[in-house]
Amino acid sequence: MSSRDSTARPTADGPRPVRRPDRVRRPGPLRRLGVLVGAAALLAGCGGPSRPPVPEPTVTASPTPTCADGFLVSAGEVSAAAGLRALGIELRNCGTAPYQVQGFPVVRMLDEQRQPLDVTVGNGSSPVSAPDSYDVPPRPVVLAPGEVARTRVLWRNTVAETTRPPVNGSYLQISPAPGAPAQLVAPDGGIDLGTTGRLAVNAWLPAG
Image (cartoon, one colour):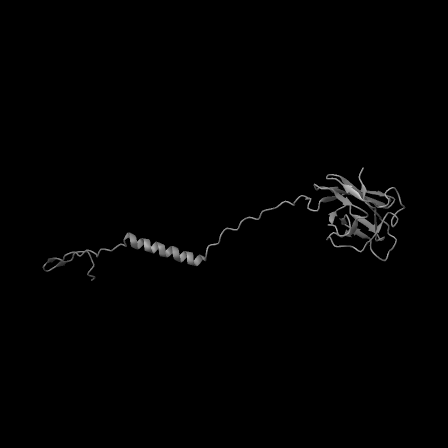
């Protein structure tokens, strides 16, 4: 029989003394603190290093046109009549000093991906249409701040060849003169050249 049995049994000499169980020693406050710290360290090791929160991406609005070149180019509405297209182009002096243009602008036609298309650009209306009031000899045009010069781009939507598809452009790249900075305009409805492969451009004139 176990010596830890607390039930008294009679003996020849009288009742056997009762032995109380040994007292259980409980861990003190410092020991409990050490156990908690160790457990926290173990959990941190299992979870790996903590990562900083990832910031949400911010959406930036498209910048408005600036006057870095000293001028701004814009396009008007496309005028269409009997297959002839005419697009007015304006150049405004947005700087603080006079700006001069002379002669014909440099024009290139670009596709939807802004890649150049194989298009011939002629000076004056005659490559596309009969000469009119826009066909004047080129001359210097000096623009004071805020003043505007204008030109015109012509083309025809004619499909005369069935062996190649019609050419359609999305943008015109306009430089006031050879070597000057270029700016893009996007005519409403695009540039539908058909199969002609030609544009015509007039010389700069003062607006008004």
